[in-house]
Length: 421
Ligand code: ASP
Image (cartoon, rainbow, N blue to C red; front, side, top):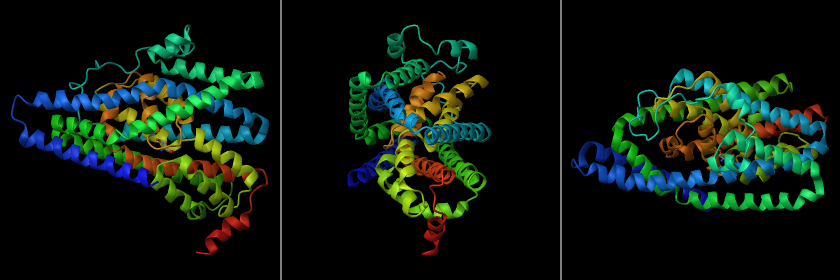
Protein backbone atom coordinates (compact mmCIF):
# COMPACT_ATOMS: atom_id res chain seq x y z
CA UNK A 1 0.00 0.00 0.00
CA UNK A 2 2.74 2.33 1.06
CA UNK A 3 4.72 1.42 -2.04
CA UNK A 4 1.74 1.92 -4.34
CA UNK A 5 1.16 5.36 -2.92
CA UNK A 6 4.74 6.35 -3.40
CA UNK A 7 4.62 5.07 -6.98
CA UNK A 8 1.64 7.32 -7.61
CA UNK A 9 3.60 10.27 -6.28
CA UNK A 10 6.66 9.38 -8.30
CA UNK A 11 4.58 9.14 -11.46
CA UNK A 12 2.89 12.47 -10.74
CA UNK A 13 6.29 14.02 -10.04
CA UNK A 14 7.57 12.60 -13.35
CA UNK A 15 4.55 14.11 -15.07
CA UNK A 16 4.99 17.55 -13.52
CA UNK A 17 8.75 17.70 -14.02
CA UNK A 18 8.35 16.41 -17.58
CA UNK A 19 5.80 19.11 -18.38
CA UNK A 20 7.95 21.85 -16.83
CA UNK A 21 11.09 20.64 -18.59
CA UNK A 22 9.29 20.32 -21.91
CA UNK A 23 7.70 23.75 -21.66
CA UNK A 24 10.97 25.35 -20.59
CA UNK A 25 12.71 23.78 -23.57
CA UNK A 26 9.95 24.75 -25.90
CA UNK A 27 9.97 28.42 -24.94
CA UNK A 28 13.38 29.35 -23.50
CA UNK A 29 16.13 26.89 -23.09
CA UNK A 30 16.69 25.10 -26.33
CA UNK A 31 19.53 26.60 -28.33
CA UNK A 32 18.67 25.96 -31.96
CA UNK A 33 20.37 22.85 -33.18
CA UNK A 34 20.45 20.98 -29.88
CA UNK A 35 16.69 20.43 -29.94
CA UNK A 36 17.10 17.23 -31.86
CA UNK A 37 19.58 15.92 -29.35
CA UNK A 38 17.03 16.22 -26.56
CA UNK A 39 13.67 15.73 -28.22
CA UNK A 40 14.51 13.13 -30.84
CA UNK A 41 17.46 11.86 -28.84
CA UNK A 42 17.28 11.33 -25.10
CA UNK A 43 13.55 11.80 -24.48
CA UNK A 44 12.67 9.71 -27.49
CA UNK A 45 15.03 6.96 -26.34
CA UNK A 46 13.78 6.76 -22.76
CA UNK A 47 10.13 7.19 -23.74
CA UNK A 48 10.49 4.66 -26.55
CA UNK A 49 12.00 2.10 -24.18
CA UNK A 50 9.04 2.48 -21.89
CA UNK A 51 6.46 2.22 -24.68
CA UNK A 52 8.24 -0.83 -26.09
CA UNK A 53 8.18 -2.49 -22.71
CA UNK A 54 4.41 -2.00 -22.65
CA UNK A 55 4.01 -3.37 -26.17
CA UNK A 56 6.18 -6.36 -25.29
CA UNK A 57 3.63 -7.46 -22.72
CA UNK A 58 0.45 -7.06 -24.75
CA UNK A 59 0.36 -10.38 -26.62
CA UNK A 60 1.24 -12.64 -23.66
CA UNK A 61 -0.98 -10.62 -21.34
CA UNK A 62 -4.02 -10.71 -23.60
CA UNK A 63 -3.64 -14.39 -24.40
CA UNK A 64 -3.06 -15.76 -20.91
CA UNK A 65 -5.44 -13.44 -19.10
CA UNK A 66 -8.31 -14.11 -21.52
CA UNK A 67 -7.60 -17.84 -21.41
CA UNK A 68 -7.61 -17.77 -17.60
CA UNK A 69 -10.70 -15.53 -17.56
CA UNK A 70 -12.60 -18.03 -19.70
CA UNK A 71 -11.45 -21.09 -17.77
CA UNK A 72 -12.53 -19.40 -14.55
CA UNK A 73 -15.97 -19.13 -16.18
CA UNK A 74 -16.04 -22.93 -16.14
CA UNK A 75 -17.18 -22.60 -12.56
CA UNK A 76 -19.85 -20.16 -13.54
CA UNK A 77 -21.32 -22.57 -16.03
CA UNK A 78 -21.89 -24.83 -13.08
CA UNK A 79 -23.53 -22.11 -11.10
CA UNK A 80 -25.92 -21.93 -14.05
CA UNK A 81 -28.52 -19.25 -13.90
CA UNK A 82 -26.63 -16.83 -11.66
CA UNK A 83 -23.57 -17.27 -13.84
CA UNK A 84 -25.45 -16.50 -17.04
CA UNK A 85 -27.14 -13.43 -15.58
CA UNK A 86 -23.89 -12.12 -14.10
CA UNK A 87 -22.00 -12.57 -17.33
CA UNK A 88 -24.76 -10.91 -19.36
CA UNK A 89 -24.88 -7.94 -16.97
CA UNK A 90 -21.11 -7.50 -16.99
CA UNK A 91 -20.76 -7.68 -20.76
CA UNK A 92 -23.78 -5.48 -21.52
CA UNK A 93 -22.78 -2.74 -19.07
CA UNK A 94 -19.24 -2.76 -20.45
CA UNK A 95 -20.55 -2.41 -24.00
CA UNK A 96 -22.79 0.49 -22.85
CA UNK A 97 -19.80 2.10 -21.09
CA UNK A 98 -17.60 2.01 -24.16
CA UNK A 99 -20.40 3.18 -26.46
CA UNK A 100 -21.08 6.12 -24.14
CA UNK A 101 -17.37 6.96 -24.13
CA UNK A 102 -17.18 6.87 -27.92
CA UNK A 103 -20.33 8.96 -28.36
CA UNK A 104 -19.29 11.66 -25.89
CA UNK A 105 -15.75 11.94 -27.20
CA UNK A 106 -16.88 12.16 -30.81
CA UNK A 107 -19.03 15.11 -29.70
CA UNK A 108 -16.46 16.74 -27.42
CA UNK A 109 -13.48 16.17 -29.75
CA UNK A 110 -10.85 16.14 -26.97
CA UNK A 111 -7.96 15.80 -29.43
CA UNK A 112 -8.84 18.83 -31.50
CA UNK A 113 -6.22 21.54 -31.43
CA UNK A 114 -3.27 19.21 -31.14
CA UNK A 115 -1.64 17.83 -34.24
CA UNK A 116 1.04 15.25 -33.83
CA UNK A 117 0.74 13.74 -37.26
CA UNK A 118 4.13 15.04 -38.27
CA UNK A 119 5.80 13.79 -35.08
CA UNK A 120 4.57 10.31 -35.77
CA UNK A 121 6.22 7.63 -37.80
CA UNK A 122 2.76 6.32 -38.43
CA UNK A 123 1.41 7.18 -41.86
CA UNK A 124 -1.92 8.93 -41.56
CA UNK A 125 -4.65 6.88 -43.09
CA UNK A 126 -8.06 5.49 -42.41
CA UNK A 127 -7.83 3.69 -39.10
CA UNK A 128 -9.19 0.42 -40.29
CA UNK A 129 -8.16 -0.32 -43.82
CA UNK A 130 -10.19 -3.45 -44.18
CA UNK A 131 -13.90 -3.72 -44.75
CA UNK A 132 -16.00 -4.93 -41.84
CA UNK A 133 -16.63 -8.25 -43.61
CA UNK A 134 -12.96 -8.81 -44.27
CA UNK A 135 -12.18 -8.02 -40.62
CA UNK A 136 -14.83 -10.48 -39.47
CA UNK A 137 -13.54 -13.13 -41.82
CA UNK A 138 -10.00 -12.58 -40.60
CA UNK A 139 -10.96 -13.05 -36.96
CA UNK A 140 -10.19 -16.73 -37.48
CA UNK A 141 -6.48 -16.91 -38.19
CA UNK A 142 -5.19 -19.47 -40.64
CA UNK A 143 -2.07 -19.61 -38.49
CA UNK A 144 -2.41 -18.85 -34.76
CA UNK A 145 1.35 -18.59 -34.30
CA UNK A 146 1.54 -15.98 -37.04
CA UNK A 147 -1.36 -14.13 -35.38
CA UNK A 148 0.68 -13.87 -32.20
CA UNK A 149 3.89 -12.96 -34.00
CA UNK A 150 2.09 -10.19 -35.86
CA UNK A 151 0.20 -9.07 -32.77
CA UNK A 152 -3.16 -9.36 -34.54
CA UNK A 153 -5.44 -8.69 -31.59
CA UNK A 154 -8.80 -9.91 -32.86
CA UNK A 155 -7.20 -13.17 -33.95
CA UNK A 156 -5.38 -13.58 -30.64
CA UNK A 157 -8.63 -12.94 -28.76
CA UNK A 158 -10.39 -15.56 -30.86
CA UNK A 159 -7.69 -18.18 -30.28
CA UNK A 160 -7.59 -17.39 -26.53
CA UNK A 161 -11.39 -17.66 -26.17
CA UNK A 162 -11.58 -20.87 -28.18
CA UNK A 163 -8.69 -22.43 -26.26
CA UNK A 164 -10.26 -21.39 -22.94
CA UNK A 165 -13.65 -22.86 -23.86
CA UNK A 166 -12.04 -26.09 -25.10
CA UNK A 167 -9.89 -26.38 -21.98
CA UNK A 168 -13.03 -26.02 -19.86
CA UNK A 169 -14.86 -28.68 -21.88
CA UNK A 170 -11.91 -31.09 -21.74
CA UNK A 171 -11.99 -30.86 -17.94
CA UNK A 172 -9.45 -32.67 -15.78
CA UNK A 173 -7.07 -33.50 -18.62
CA UNK A 174 -6.66 -29.80 -19.39
CA UNK A 175 -5.73 -29.00 -15.79
CA UNK A 176 -1.95 -28.91 -16.37
CA UNK A 177 -2.38 -26.39 -19.21
CA UNK A 178 -4.77 -24.28 -17.13
CA UNK A 179 -2.31 -24.36 -14.22
CA UNK A 180 0.50 -23.43 -16.61
CA UNK A 181 -1.45 -20.47 -17.98
CA UNK A 182 -2.43 -19.34 -14.48
CA UNK A 183 1.19 -19.33 -13.47
CA UNK A 184 2.16 -17.60 -16.73
CA UNK A 185 -0.53 -15.03 -15.96
CA UNK A 186 0.99 -14.41 -12.53
CA UNK A 187 4.42 -13.97 -14.12
CA UNK A 188 3.15 -11.50 -16.73
CA UNK A 189 1.33 -9.54 -14.05
CA UNK A 190 4.54 -9.36 -12.08
CA UNK A 191 6.35 -8.06 -15.15
CA UNK A 192 3.71 -5.35 -15.43
CA UNK A 193 4.29 -4.42 -11.81
CA UNK A 194 8.06 -4.26 -12.31
CA UNK A 195 7.68 -2.12 -15.41
CA UNK A 196 5.39 0.21 -13.54
CA UNK A 197 8.41 1.05 -11.38
CA UNK A 198 9.96 2.57 -14.51
CA UNK A 199 6.82 4.54 -15.26
CA UNK A 200 7.96 7.79 -13.57
CA UNK A 201 11.01 7.99 -15.90
CA UNK A 202 9.02 6.94 -18.96
CA UNK A 203 6.32 9.46 -18.14
CA UNK A 204 8.90 12.20 -17.62
CA UNK A 205 10.55 11.57 -20.99
CA UNK A 206 7.33 11.19 -22.95
CA UNK A 207 5.67 14.26 -21.49
CA UNK A 208 8.85 16.33 -21.83
CA UNK A 209 9.11 15.28 -25.48
CA UNK A 210 5.52 16.21 -26.24
CA UNK A 211 5.64 19.55 -24.44
CA UNK A 212 9.04 20.45 -25.87
CA UNK A 213 7.65 19.85 -29.34
CA UNK A 214 4.26 21.51 -29.03
CA UNK A 215 4.52 23.70 -25.90
CA UNK A 216 1.32 24.84 -24.24
CA UNK A 217 -0.68 23.54 -27.20
CA UNK A 218 -0.57 20.09 -25.59
CA UNK A 219 -2.08 21.28 -22.34
CA UNK A 220 -5.64 22.04 -23.37
CA UNK A 221 -6.33 18.84 -25.35
CA UNK A 222 -4.85 16.76 -22.52
CA UNK A 223 -7.06 18.53 -20.02
CA UNK A 224 -10.01 17.97 -22.32
CA UNK A 225 -9.13 14.27 -22.50
CA UNK A 226 -9.03 13.99 -18.70
CA UNK A 227 -12.30 15.88 -18.29
CA UNK A 228 -14.01 13.82 -20.99
CA UNK A 229 -13.03 10.57 -19.25
CA UNK A 230 -14.21 11.94 -15.90
CA UNK A 231 -17.52 13.14 -17.35
CA UNK A 232 -18.23 9.78 -19.01
CA UNK A 233 -17.32 7.92 -15.82
CA UNK A 234 -19.82 10.09 -13.97
CA UNK A 235 -22.48 9.66 -16.68
CA UNK A 236 -22.08 5.90 -16.57
CA UNK A 237 -22.46 5.92 -12.79
CA UNK A 238 -25.57 8.10 -12.96
CA UNK A 239 -27.28 6.73 -16.06
CA UNK A 240 -26.33 3.08 -16.20
CA UNK A 241 -25.80 2.12 -12.56
CA UNK A 242 -28.38 4.34 -10.92
CA UNK A 243 -30.83 3.57 -13.71
CA UNK A 244 -30.28 -0.18 -13.29
CA UNK A 245 -30.68 -0.01 -9.51
CA UNK A 246 -33.88 1.96 -9.84
CA UNK A 247 -35.45 0.29 -12.87
CA UNK A 248 -34.27 -3.31 -12.52
CA UNK A 249 -34.07 -3.49 -8.73
CA UNK A 250 -36.58 -0.88 -7.57
CA UNK A 251 -33.89 0.35 -5.17
CA UNK A 252 -33.02 3.83 -4.01
CA UNK A 253 -29.85 4.60 -6.01
CA UNK A 254 -28.43 7.31 -3.72
CA UNK A 255 -28.57 4.92 -0.80
CA UNK A 256 -26.36 2.57 -2.71
CA UNK A 257 -23.63 5.18 -3.09
CA UNK A 258 -23.73 6.03 0.60
CA UNK A 259 -23.53 2.35 1.49
CA UNK A 260 -20.74 1.51 -0.90
CA UNK A 261 -18.64 4.61 -0.21
CA UNK A 262 -16.06 2.89 2.03
CA UNK A 263 -15.12 0.46 -0.75
CA UNK A 264 -15.10 3.27 -3.32
CA UNK A 265 -12.62 5.28 -1.31
CA UNK A 266 -10.29 2.27 -1.03
CA UNK A 267 -10.64 1.62 -4.76
CA UNK A 268 -9.72 5.24 -5.42
CA UNK A 269 -6.63 5.25 -3.25
CA UNK A 270 -5.28 1.85 -4.35
CA UNK A 271 -6.29 2.00 -8.06
CA UNK A 272 -6.75 -1.74 -7.81
CA UNK A 273 -10.00 -3.72 -8.04
CA UNK A 274 -8.20 -6.81 -6.79
CA UNK A 275 -6.65 -4.99 -3.87
CA UNK A 276 -10.05 -3.61 -2.90
CA UNK A 277 -11.83 -6.96 -3.28
CA UNK A 278 -11.92 -7.97 0.40
CA UNK A 279 -13.36 -4.59 1.34
CA UNK A 280 -15.83 -4.47 -1.53
CA UNK A 281 -17.13 -7.97 -0.70
CA UNK A 282 -17.46 -7.01 2.94
CA UNK A 283 -19.21 -3.76 2.05
CA UNK A 284 -21.82 -5.31 -0.25
CA UNK A 285 -22.56 -7.89 2.40
CA UNK A 286 -22.67 -5.81 5.57
CA UNK A 287 -23.85 -2.46 4.21
CA UNK A 288 -25.79 -3.39 1.07
CA UNK A 289 -27.48 -6.55 2.33
CA UNK A 290 -26.20 -9.11 -0.17
CA UNK A 291 -25.88 -12.74 0.97
CA UNK A 292 -22.37 -14.15 0.98
CA UNK A 293 -23.36 -16.98 -1.37
CA UNK A 294 -23.89 -14.46 -4.18
CA UNK A 295 -21.22 -11.86 -3.31
CA UNK A 296 -18.46 -14.45 -2.94
CA UNK A 297 -19.06 -15.48 -6.51
CA UNK A 298 -20.02 -12.35 -8.43
CA UNK A 299 -17.57 -9.88 -6.82
CA UNK A 300 -14.30 -11.77 -7.56
CA UNK A 301 -15.58 -12.54 -11.04
CA UNK A 302 -16.35 -8.84 -11.54
CA UNK A 303 -12.92 -7.79 -10.27
CA UNK A 304 -11.44 -10.11 -12.91
CA UNK A 305 -13.58 -9.53 -15.98
CA UNK A 306 -15.77 -6.46 -15.47
CA UNK A 307 -13.98 -3.13 -16.01
CA UNK A 308 -16.44 -0.52 -17.20
CA UNK A 309 -14.26 2.37 -16.06
CA UNK A 310 -11.30 0.97 -17.97
CA UNK A 311 -13.44 0.52 -21.09
CA UNK A 312 -14.52 4.17 -20.80
CA UNK A 313 -10.93 5.40 -20.62
CA UNK A 314 -10.09 3.23 -23.64
CA UNK A 315 -13.02 4.55 -25.67
CA UNK A 316 -12.10 8.18 -25.04
CA UNK A 317 -8.41 7.42 -25.62
CA UNK A 318 -9.11 5.83 -29.01
CA UNK A 319 -10.98 8.90 -30.26
CA UNK A 320 -8.42 11.27 -28.68
CA UNK A 321 -5.45 9.51 -30.25
CA UNK A 322 -7.16 9.27 -33.65
CA UNK A 323 -7.88 13.02 -33.58
CA UNK A 324 -4.41 13.98 -32.42
CA UNK A 325 -2.79 11.96 -35.21
CA UNK A 326 -5.34 13.16 -37.75
CA UNK A 327 -6.61 9.67 -38.50
CA UNK A 328 -10.24 9.27 -39.57
CA UNK A 329 -12.17 6.54 -37.80
CA UNK A 330 -14.67 4.88 -40.14
CA UNK A 331 -17.97 3.74 -38.65
CA UNK A 332 -17.14 0.05 -38.62
CA UNK A 333 -14.02 0.71 -36.58
CA UNK A 334 -16.29 1.86 -33.74
CA UNK A 335 -17.85 -1.60 -33.69
CA UNK A 336 -14.41 -3.14 -33.56
CA UNK A 337 -13.49 -0.82 -30.68
CA UNK A 338 -16.66 -1.84 -28.78
CA UNK A 339 -15.80 -5.49 -29.35
CA UNK A 340 -12.12 -5.30 -28.46
CA UNK A 341 -12.61 -2.96 -25.50
CA UNK A 342 -15.20 -5.35 -24.06
CA UNK A 343 -12.68 -8.16 -24.48
CA UNK A 344 -9.94 -5.92 -23.09
CA UNK A 345 -12.11 -5.45 -20.03
CA UNK A 346 -12.08 -9.22 -19.53
CA UNK A 347 -8.33 -9.29 -20.15
CA UNK A 348 -7.53 -6.34 -17.85
CA UNK A 349 -6.44 -7.50 -14.43
CA UNK A 350 -7.66 -5.51 -11.47
CA UNK A 351 -4.30 -3.96 -10.65
CA UNK A 352 -2.98 -0.45 -11.27
CA UNK A 353 -2.07 0.57 -14.80
CA UNK A 354 -3.04 -2.56 -16.74
CA UNK A 355 -5.86 -0.79 -18.56
CA UNK A 356 -3.27 1.29 -20.38
CA UNK A 357 -1.49 -1.82 -21.57
CA UNK A 358 -4.65 -3.45 -22.86
CA UNK A 359 -5.42 -0.12 -24.55
CA UNK A 360 -2.66 -0.95 -27.01
CA UNK A 361 -4.65 -4.01 -28.03
CA UNK A 362 -7.67 -1.81 -28.76
CA UNK A 363 -5.53 0.70 -30.66
CA UNK A 364 -3.88 -1.99 -32.74
CA UNK A 365 -7.21 -3.58 -33.59
CA UNK A 366 -8.16 -0.41 -35.52
CA UNK A 367 -4.67 0.34 -36.70
CA UNK A 368 -4.07 3.43 -34.57
CA UNK A 369 -0.51 4.26 -33.45
CA UNK A 370 0.29 2.64 -30.11
CA UNK A 371 2.77 5.45 -29.41
CA UNK A 372 -0.31 7.62 -28.81
CA UNK A 373 -0.30 6.07 -25.34
CA UNK A 374 2.76 8.22 -24.68
CA UNK A 375 0.53 11.26 -24.68
CA UNK A 376 -1.93 10.09 -22.10
CA UNK A 377 0.31 8.00 -19.91
CA UNK A 378 1.30 11.03 -17.88
CA UNK A 379 -2.21 11.71 -16.72
CA UNK A 380 -3.21 8.07 -16.46
CA UNK A 381 -2.54 7.54 -12.79
CA UNK A 382 -5.23 9.98 -11.79
CA UNK A 383 -7.67 8.42 -14.22
CA UNK A 384 -6.69 4.94 -13.05
CA UNK A 385 -7.83 5.84 -9.55
CA UNK A 386 -11.18 7.17 -10.73
CA UNK A 387 -11.89 4.39 -13.23
CA UNK A 388 -11.14 1.77 -10.58
CA UNK A 389 -13.97 3.26 -8.50
CA UNK A 390 -16.30 2.73 -11.47
CA UNK A 391 -14.94 -0.78 -12.04
CA UNK A 392 -15.78 -1.93 -8.53
CA UNK A 393 -19.07 -0.03 -8.44
CA UNK A 394 -20.21 -1.96 -11.52
CA UNK A 395 -19.42 -5.23 -9.76
CA UNK A 396 -21.38 -4.17 -6.68
CA UNK A 397 -24.44 -2.97 -8.63
CA UNK A 398 -24.56 -6.25 -10.54
CA UNK A 399 -24.14 -8.22 -7.31
CA UNK A 400 -27.02 -6.40 -5.61
CA UNK A 401 -29.35 -6.86 -8.58
CA UNK A 402 -28.51 -10.56 -8.94
CA UNK A 403 -28.94 -11.08 -5.19
CA UNK A 404 -32.29 -9.31 -5.29
CA UNK A 405 -33.52 -11.42 -8.20
CA UNK A 406 -32.44 -14.59 -6.41
CA UNK A 407 -34.02 -13.71 -3.05
CA UNK A 408 -30.56 -13.32 -1.48
CA UNK A 409 -30.90 -9.65 -0.62
CA UNK A 410 -31.81 -8.09 2.73
CA UNK A 411 -33.51 -4.73 2.17
CA UNK A 412 -33.41 -3.96 5.89
CA UNK A 413 -29.58 -3.91 5.84
CA UNK A 414 -29.56 -1.84 2.64
CA UNK A 415 -31.72 0.80 4.29
CA UNK A 416 -30.23 0.53 7.77
CA UNK A 417 -26.66 1.26 6.76
CA UNK A 418 -27.75 4.82 6.18
CA UNK A 419 -29.74 5.13 9.32
CA UNK A 420 -26.53 4.98 11.40
CA UNK A 421 -25.15 8.05 9.70
N1 ASP B 1 -6.62 -0.20 -12.11
C1 ASP B 1 -7.79 -0.79 -12.71
C2 ASP B 1 -8.45 -1.72 -11.73
O1 ASP B 1 -7.81 -2.27 -10.88
C3 ASP B 1 -7.45 -1.53 -13.96
C4 ASP B 1 -6.96 -0.56 -15.01
O2 ASP B 1 -7.80 0.03 -15.69
O3 ASP B 1 -5.76 -0.37 -15.12
O4 ASP B 1 -9.64 -1.91 -11.76
